[in-house]
Length: 398
Image (cartoon, rainbow, N blue to C red):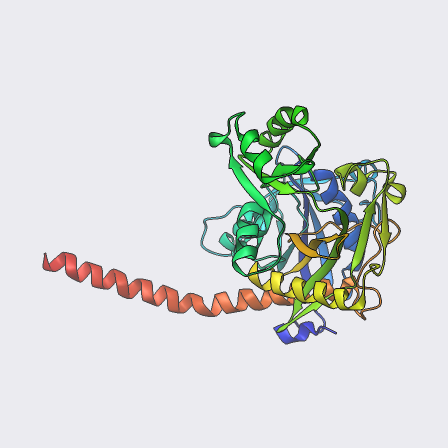
């Protein structure tokens, strides 16, 4: 489906791909799962893949790919398979840098980075900015798309401004919070309602508030994750999920999945998503049990949200489907977690698109973006020289 020869890669060459995962994040374990499950989808005839593990305390380790556990949803098992050597990425030297092993100084060439970091210090455009600074092509979300997609406050504002359906919400900044805020919230929201951090993922820090006595402790927990707290009305119904990515000028969408939370959980918590009881804690219907016209509406909303939020890469759109059959865009996940087929079936099946196709598309887009930036570099350099010359003349005349 996607021809990497378009980006002038010789047929006999392999691209050196750096698959980056882990990270200084509460979603570190989710990232291990994603790396384990995405690795088998890199075509060995096209790519030579190196694994870069970023530890919880920020150390970089180039992993032994042969020992790394693949197609696994158990983070403890994956972590036990991580072995390798410490590496570093010197930047600020002008040219595109390489990874270097700390002990021997061996250079590890990188053609493109593929990042599956989730949560703070990984998603949110942070790593994209690093790779851009280092002049290394990076697949996935754009710098802007990663940032606005991670901040639920900014994201919802953009969705509302574009006229997309979003459930009622408000934002409380930590510096503005007082216990009296609850009085104002009771005038705007009925119990139950949700509160959650503006910058977090995987349902971490999310609380369902049933009564006043639940509120204070939950607020303190939310503010331990982020300085901004989102208050959101409760939508009685189910959750819908749909994936999207851009191939050329076309935004492709997957099948729509519907999730009902099992009796063990009040809502779609971290444990419900990734726990060992995943099969019973949430019930998934593929395709979603909604009318055909609503399937089409979800797909159109996904495409519109993708454009509004500068999606890039492969994203997952989460939506609410109320008992009254109303659809609300909840949020975008610009680096969605990837679990094995058994626990999280791919929504691309039946669309004629494989995960390997998506990997190819994301890498192709990253290399094309890098070529465009490279072609602009001489113009920027010359413009900078002209500006400096003008400045020198002005200073001399003074």
